[in-house]
Length: 139
Image (cartoon, rainbow, N blue to C red; front, side):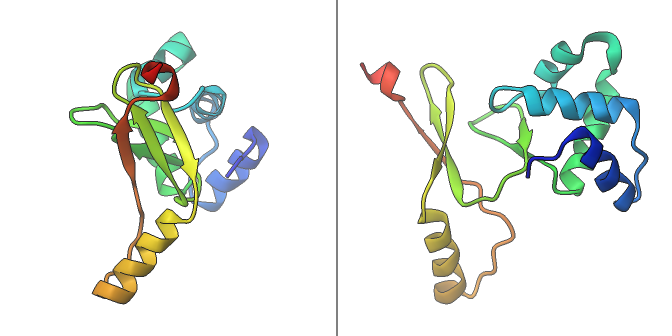
C-alpha cells in the first residue's frame, strides 16, 4: 500500500490517531528507504527531528493500521521495517552481503491453500524467508 503523507493523515485519523509531525517524518523516511530498514537506520535518517521512542511508537501505530510491516530476516536479526505489502511474495536474503529481495509468485497462495485445505489451519500472515547467496555473491 503506497500511502502519501496526505493520505497518511486520513488513515491515522480514521484509526483514531492524531496525525503528528513525528509520525509524518517517520513515514516519509520509511517510504524513502531502500528496502528493509532497522529502527536505528530510520533514526539516522531522521536525525534529531524525532527521538527513538517516538520512532518505535510510530512504527507500532503504522503496523496496527496495516501501513507498515516488520520482518525478522535471520537468526538474531533486528526487526526490519518496510511499508506494508501483500504477503504474496517472500524474502530472499543473501547470507553474504545481506541484500534482501522480494520474489513474487504463486507459492504463498499455494501454501495458504495447503494449510487451510490440508490441515484446517487459517493463516493470518505468511512470512517466508529464504536464505542463500544472491547472484552477485555467487559469481
